[in-house]
Image (cartoon, rainbow, N blue to C red; front, side, top):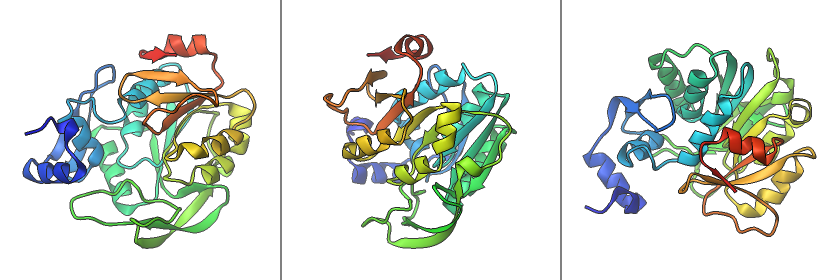
Amino acid sequence: MKNYKELRIGEKKAFWKENPLLGEIPINIKGIIPFKMYSQNDDSVVKELHWTNYEGWELTSLLLWSDLLMNIPKGIIFDIGAYSGIYSIIASKKAKKCEIHAFDIQDNCINRLKKNMKINEVNNVKIHQAACTDFNGESIFYFYEEEGIMSSIAGLVPNKINDLEKKIRTVKLDDLKVNGSVQLIKIDVEGAELSTLGGLKHILINDSPDVLIEVNNFKDIKKVKNLFPSGYVLYDIDEDSLTIKKMGWFKKPSAHRNYLFTKKDQMTIKEIFSGLVK
Protein backbone atom coordinates (compact mmCIF):
# COMPACT_ATOMS: atom_id res chain seq x y z
CA MET A 1 0.00 0.00 0.00
CA LYS A 2 1.06 3.61 -0.62
CA ASN A 3 1.95 5.89 2.24
CA TYR A 4 -1.40 7.11 3.62
CA LYS A 5 -0.53 10.75 2.91
CA GLU A 6 -0.06 9.90 -0.76
CA LEU A 7 -3.53 8.39 -1.18
CA ARG A 8 -6.05 10.24 -3.31
CA ILE A 9 -9.50 10.91 -1.87
CA GLY A 10 -11.09 7.89 -3.60
CA GLU A 11 -8.31 5.64 -2.31
CA LYS A 12 -8.74 7.08 1.19
CA LYS A 13 -12.46 6.35 1.17
CA ALA A 14 -11.76 2.73 0.21
CA PHE A 15 -9.08 2.49 2.93
CA TRP A 16 -11.42 3.96 5.56
CA LYS A 17 -14.11 1.45 4.64
CA GLU A 18 -11.67 -1.44 5.00
CA ASN A 19 -10.21 -0.08 8.27
CA PRO A 20 -13.07 1.47 10.25
CA LEU A 21 -12.45 3.65 13.29
CA LEU A 22 -15.28 3.08 15.76
CA GLY A 23 -15.96 4.29 19.28
CA GLU A 24 -13.80 6.55 21.45
CA ILE A 25 -10.56 7.19 19.57
CA PRO A 26 -7.50 8.48 21.52
CA ILE A 27 -6.03 11.68 20.05
CA ASN A 28 -2.36 12.11 20.99
CA ILE A 29 -0.89 15.15 19.25
CA LYS A 30 2.63 16.02 20.36
CA GLY A 31 2.58 19.22 22.40
CA ILE A 32 -1.17 19.06 23.10
CA ILE A 33 -2.97 17.52 26.08
CA PRO A 34 -4.34 14.07 25.05
CA PHE A 35 -8.09 13.68 24.61
CA LYS A 36 -10.65 11.44 22.89
CA MET A 37 -13.01 11.85 19.95
CA TYR A 38 -15.96 9.64 19.12
CA SER A 39 -16.13 8.11 15.65
CA GLN A 40 -18.52 5.99 13.64
CA ASN A 41 -15.86 5.92 10.91
CA ASP A 42 -17.43 9.17 9.70
CA ASP A 43 -15.24 11.94 11.14
CA SER A 44 -12.61 13.11 8.63
CA VAL A 45 -10.61 14.90 11.32
CA VAL A 46 -10.28 11.76 13.44
CA LYS A 47 -9.38 9.60 10.44
CA GLU A 48 -6.76 12.01 9.10
CA LEU A 49 -5.12 12.37 12.51
CA HIS A 50 -5.19 8.67 13.38
CA TRP A 51 -3.85 7.38 10.06
CA THR A 52 -1.03 9.96 9.85
CA ASN A 53 0.23 9.33 13.40
CA TYR A 54 -1.42 12.61 14.49
CA GLU A 55 0.45 14.79 12.01
CA GLY A 56 -1.85 14.97 9.00
CA TRP A 57 -4.62 17.44 9.78
CA GLU A 58 -3.99 21.14 10.47
CA LEU A 59 -1.08 20.30 12.77
CA THR A 60 0.42 23.80 12.76
CA SER A 61 -2.97 25.43 13.36
CA LEU A 62 -3.76 23.08 16.24
CA LEU A 63 -0.40 23.71 17.93
CA LEU A 64 -0.71 27.46 17.40
CA TRP A 65 -4.22 27.38 18.87
CA SER A 66 -2.99 25.38 21.86
CA ASP A 67 -0.04 27.73 22.43
CA LEU A 68 -2.23 30.85 22.22
CA LEU A 69 -4.57 29.34 24.81
CA MET A 70 -1.73 29.12 27.35
CA ASN A 71 -1.68 32.91 27.53
CA ILE A 72 -5.40 33.34 28.26
CA PRO A 73 -6.13 33.28 32.02
CA LYS A 74 -9.86 33.93 31.53
CA GLY A 75 -12.32 35.30 29.00
CA ILE A 76 -14.37 34.14 26.03
CA ILE A 77 -13.35 31.86 23.15
CA PHE A 78 -15.36 31.33 19.95
CA ASP A 79 -15.09 28.18 17.81
CA ILE A 80 -17.09 29.10 14.69
CA GLY A 81 -17.67 26.17 12.38
CA ALA A 82 -16.78 23.68 15.09
CA TYR A 83 -17.54 20.45 13.15
CA SER A 84 -16.91 17.65 15.69
CA GLY A 85 -15.19 19.95 18.16
CA ILE A 86 -11.43 19.42 18.13
CA TYR A 87 -10.63 23.12 18.65
CA SER A 88 -13.24 23.39 21.42
CA ILE A 89 -11.90 20.30 23.20
CA ILE A 90 -8.34 21.66 23.16
CA ALA A 91 -9.61 25.03 24.41
CA SER A 92 -11.53 23.37 27.24
CA LYS A 93 -8.40 21.50 28.37
CA LYS A 94 -5.97 24.43 28.11
CA ALA A 95 -8.20 27.32 29.23
CA LYS A 96 -10.27 25.85 32.03
CA LYS A 97 -11.39 29.25 33.37
CA CYS A 98 -12.58 30.44 29.97
CA GLU A 99 -16.10 30.29 28.58
CA ILE A 100 -16.02 28.59 25.18
CA HIS A 101 -18.79 28.92 22.60
CA ALA A 102 -18.92 26.34 19.79
CA PHE A 103 -21.08 27.06 16.73
CA ASP A 104 -22.15 24.79 13.90
CA ILE A 105 -25.10 24.55 11.51
CA GLN A 106 -25.47 20.81 10.90
CA ASP A 107 -27.52 18.44 13.06
CA ASN A 108 -24.93 15.64 12.91
CA CYS A 109 -22.11 18.00 13.92
CA ILE A 110 -24.11 19.34 16.86
CA ASN A 111 -24.85 15.80 18.03
CA ARG A 112 -21.19 14.82 17.70
CA LEU A 113 -20.07 17.98 19.51
CA LYS A 114 -22.28 17.04 22.45
CA LYS A 115 -20.94 13.48 22.43
CA ASN A 116 -17.30 14.62 22.33
CA MET A 117 -17.79 17.12 25.14
CA LYS A 118 -19.38 14.37 27.25
CA ILE A 119 -16.65 11.75 26.76
CA ASN A 120 -13.98 14.36 27.59
CA GLU A 121 -15.91 15.53 30.68
CA VAL A 122 -15.98 19.09 29.36
CA ASN A 123 -18.15 21.57 31.25
CA ASN A 124 -17.04 24.99 29.96
CA VAL A 125 -18.24 24.71 26.33
CA LYS A 126 -21.63 26.08 25.25
CA ILE A 127 -22.89 24.61 21.97
CA HIS A 128 -24.98 26.71 19.56
CA GLN A 129 -26.72 25.43 16.44
CA ALA A 130 -26.53 28.68 14.50
CA ALA A 131 -24.71 30.43 11.67
CA CYS A 132 -22.54 33.37 12.72
CA THR A 133 -23.38 36.23 10.35
CA ASP A 134 -23.81 40.02 10.31
CA PHE A 135 -27.51 39.84 11.26
CA ASN A 136 -29.83 38.08 13.71
CA GLY A 137 -32.60 36.01 12.18
CA GLU A 138 -32.69 33.10 9.75
CA SER A 139 -30.88 32.05 6.60
CA ILE A 140 -30.54 29.09 4.25
CA PHE A 141 -27.49 26.85 4.48
CA TYR A 142 -26.35 24.35 1.88
CA PHE A 143 -24.95 20.88 2.47
CA TYR A 144 -24.61 17.40 1.04
CA GLU A 145 -24.94 13.92 2.49
CA GLU A 146 -22.69 10.96 1.78
CA GLU A 147 -22.84 7.60 3.48
CA GLY A 148 -20.19 7.23 6.15
CA ILE A 149 -19.01 10.87 6.09
CA MET A 150 -19.85 13.86 8.28
CA SER A 151 -19.68 16.68 5.77
CA SER A 152 -17.29 19.48 6.74
CA ILE A 153 -18.13 21.82 3.85
CA ALA A 154 -21.70 22.86 4.62
CA GLY A 155 -22.12 26.62 4.45
CA LEU A 156 -24.21 29.67 3.65
CA VAL A 157 -22.65 29.98 0.20
CA PRO A 158 -24.09 27.59 -2.43
CA ASN A 159 -21.76 25.45 -4.53
CA LYS A 160 -21.96 22.47 -6.89
CA ILE A 161 -21.33 19.86 -4.20
CA ASN A 162 -23.91 21.05 -1.67
CA ASP A 163 -27.20 20.04 -3.30
CA LEU A 164 -29.38 20.11 -0.17
CA GLU A 165 -30.60 23.12 1.79
CA LYS A 166 -32.16 23.92 5.15
CA LYS A 167 -33.11 26.93 7.27
CA ILE A 168 -30.84 27.88 10.15
CA ARG A 169 -30.86 30.47 12.92
CA THR A 170 -28.32 33.25 12.44
CA VAL A 171 -26.56 35.20 15.18
CA LYS A 172 -24.57 38.41 15.11
CA LEU A 173 -21.81 37.77 17.63
CA ASP A 174 -21.52 41.45 18.57
CA ASP A 175 -25.01 41.00 20.08
CA LEU A 176 -24.32 37.72 21.89
CA LYS A 177 -24.37 38.16 25.67
CA VAL A 178 -21.16 36.79 27.17
CA ASN A 179 -19.43 37.20 30.53
CA GLY A 180 -16.10 38.79 29.62
CA SER A 181 -13.97 39.91 26.72
CA VAL A 182 -13.38 37.73 23.65
CA GLN A 183 -9.75 36.54 23.64
CA LEU A 184 -9.49 34.00 20.81
CA ILE A 185 -11.57 33.02 17.76
CA LYS A 186 -11.43 30.24 15.18
CA ILE A 187 -13.45 30.71 11.98
CA ASP A 188 -14.12 27.95 9.43
CA VAL A 189 -17.29 28.90 7.57
CA GLU A 190 -16.72 27.72 3.99
CA GLY A 191 -16.84 31.03 2.10
CA ALA A 192 -18.99 33.07 4.50
CA GLU A 193 -16.01 34.74 6.22
CA LEU A 194 -17.02 38.30 5.28
CA SER A 195 -20.49 37.90 6.79
CA THR A 196 -19.10 36.32 9.98
CA LEU A 197 -16.49 39.06 10.41
CA GLY A 198 -19.17 41.69 9.77
CA GLY A 199 -20.93 40.42 12.88
CA LEU A 200 -17.72 40.67 14.91
CA LYS A 201 -16.95 44.31 14.11
CA HIS A 202 -17.25 45.69 17.65
CA ILE A 203 -15.58 42.67 19.25
CA LEU A 204 -12.55 43.08 16.99
CA ILE A 205 -12.32 46.79 17.84
CA ASN A 206 -12.94 46.53 21.58
CA ASP A 207 -11.38 43.17 22.53
CA SER A 208 -8.65 42.68 19.86
CA PRO A 209 -8.84 38.85 19.94
CA ASP A 210 -6.42 36.65 18.02
CA VAL A 211 -8.25 35.07 15.07
CA LEU A 212 -7.45 31.83 13.25
CA ILE A 213 -9.43 31.81 10.01
CA GLU A 214 -9.74 29.53 6.99
CA VAL A 215 -9.95 31.35 3.64
CA ASN A 216 -10.33 28.91 0.76
CA ASN A 217 -9.49 31.39 -2.00
CA PHE A 218 -6.36 33.48 -1.49
CA LYS A 219 -7.87 36.15 -3.74
CA ASP A 220 -10.34 36.87 -0.92
CA ILE A 221 -7.63 37.61 1.65
CA LYS A 222 -7.57 41.35 0.92
CA LYS A 223 -11.34 41.61 1.47
CA VAL A 224 -10.98 39.66 4.71
CA LYS A 225 -8.09 41.82 5.92
CA ASN A 226 -10.08 44.99 5.24
CA LEU A 227 -12.62 43.91 7.86
CA PHE A 228 -9.98 43.84 10.61
CA PRO A 229 -9.23 47.08 12.49
CA SER A 230 -5.92 48.87 12.07
CA GLY A 231 -3.06 47.18 13.90
CA TYR A 232 -3.86 43.59 13.00
CA VAL A 233 -1.02 41.65 11.36
CA LEU A 234 -1.56 38.66 9.05
CA TYR A 235 0.37 35.37 9.24
CA ASP A 236 0.17 32.51 6.75
CA ILE A 237 -0.04 29.11 8.49
CA ASP A 238 2.01 26.38 6.80
CA GLU A 239 0.51 23.09 7.97
CA ASP A 240 3.41 20.96 6.70
CA SER A 241 6.35 22.64 8.42
CA LEU A 242 5.13 23.94 11.82
CA THR A 243 5.76 27.43 10.48
CA ILE A 244 3.82 30.68 10.37
CA LYS A 245 4.99 33.50 8.09
CA LYS A 246 4.21 37.18 8.42
CA MET A 247 2.57 38.22 5.17
CA GLY A 248 2.92 41.25 2.97
CA TRP A 249 0.90 41.62 -0.21
CA PHE A 250 3.78 40.49 -2.39
CA LYS A 251 4.43 37.19 -0.63
CA LYS A 252 3.31 33.95 -2.20
CA PRO A 253 0.70 32.09 -0.14
CA SER A 254 1.26 28.54 1.02
CA ALA A 255 -0.74 25.66 -0.40
CA HIS A 256 -2.87 25.79 2.75
CA ARG A 257 -5.82 27.91 3.69
CA ASN A 258 -5.46 28.88 7.35
CA TYR A 259 -4.28 32.27 8.59
CA LEU A 260 -3.67 34.07 11.87
CA PHE A 261 -4.73 37.67 12.42
CA THR A 262 -3.21 39.18 15.57
CA LYS A 263 -2.28 42.48 17.18
CA LYS A 264 0.58 40.83 19.06
CA ASP A 265 4.05 41.89 17.92
CA GLN A 266 6.30 39.34 16.25
CA MET A 267 8.56 38.92 19.29
CA THR A 268 5.55 38.01 21.44
CA ILE A 269 4.31 35.52 18.83
CA LYS A 270 7.78 33.91 18.77
CA GLU A 271 7.68 33.56 22.56
CA ILE A 272 4.21 31.97 22.45
CA PHE A 273 4.38 29.64 19.45
CA SER A 274 6.41 26.44 19.78
CA GLY A 275 6.92 26.26 16.01
CA LEU A 276 8.86 28.58 13.70
CA VAL A 277 7.85 32.22 13.14
CA LYS A 278 9.16 34.02 10.07
